[in-house]
Amino acid sequence: MQPPAFVFIARHFGESEELHAWKAFAEKEGHPALSLCAAKGRHPHARVHMGGSLLGLRRRFRKSQAALPPHRFHIYFNGWGVDALASVDSAARRYAFFLEPVPYFERMVIHSLRFVQGVIVPSEAMKTYLRQKAGFIPERLITVLPPPWEAAAALSADGETAADSPVVGFAPRLEVRQKRAERLLPFRAALPESTLPQLRYFGFGTNAHRLGRKIAQKNGFHQVTRTTFAERMAEIDRWDVALWLSSYEGAPQALGRTIVRGGLPLFPKPDDTPPPIPLHPACLYPAHEMEAAARSLLDLIALSPEKRRIIIQQNRAALAKIIAAEAAWEAFVEAEQARAPRPLPRKAAFGPLWPLRIYSTFLQFARTGQFEFERPVVEIS
Image (spheres, rainbow, N blue to C red):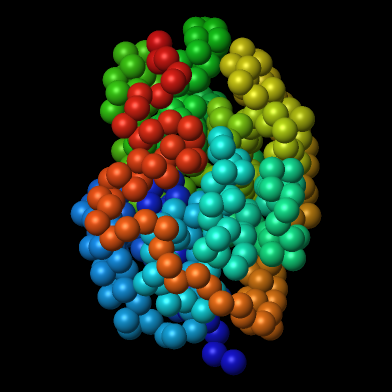
């Protein structure tokens, strides 16, 4: 049987970077693949302009499918667009790929399930969270597909040995609502000036311009200009410690890369679900506690080479126990090919004259409890 083609659909920067890694991986596995995403129509990988009305978006989406094989699987990252594009989506199967445990998660899941045949998550921890929030979903409809850590960018040199001047980086995009980038400031304030490491970050995201001005006024921060996904991953490969500050994380690409390369992640222990990878305790801190995160960072920087290697080896062993992306992908495709298809809804949930901006605003509210045009609830100081 001819392998199915895959179409990956996403809206925002963070999701689109996940999307590009999956597209590269699908092509590596022998599947035709197409990514459809944009950020105000200017994303370098954009294939469908995301402006105007839903009528225009549907027209462009229908046109993008014309040259693709008829046997296609469409994967909507975090469910964005599936409710608006259902009437022109001619895929054999549709899936919602829920990447992280965002606020109001169950509401987003319930809405998306009307338009898809299955749900994909990036880790067993995320599956556990999904089952907690939406236990009515049959387990047979949930597929775990671990991120393809090395699909989009070759790994840089091994980083087991810490540099004399340690480099610490904030791995996610500079965004407040989900990535909690505003915590960089209290995190830095909790570090003693005498041992302040270089703190690197990528200057893009929903709140990047406003938050970037705040960060730029503080010593110790260095902005990395965002270019391509591969170059961003290569930058992360040079870090001694990669930092996350939000408990709204599924299974970040950079987390696996950090472990594989031999860097040390510093990851929050989420409130109600285990971390995506059972990291060494030295690499975990209580979510939301910036002083605890700062203490953990100083402990990681002060590790002897031998203790550092022990932690790296334990993290790698934990990562190795997770099913490889290749095996999970092959099993997913084989199972879906064998499963009897069921009719997909072809009626969209929104009228054609809805401006895309208004649609995105309502979807933003469904996902986070805040409208897209609102300032984040969190104060930046």
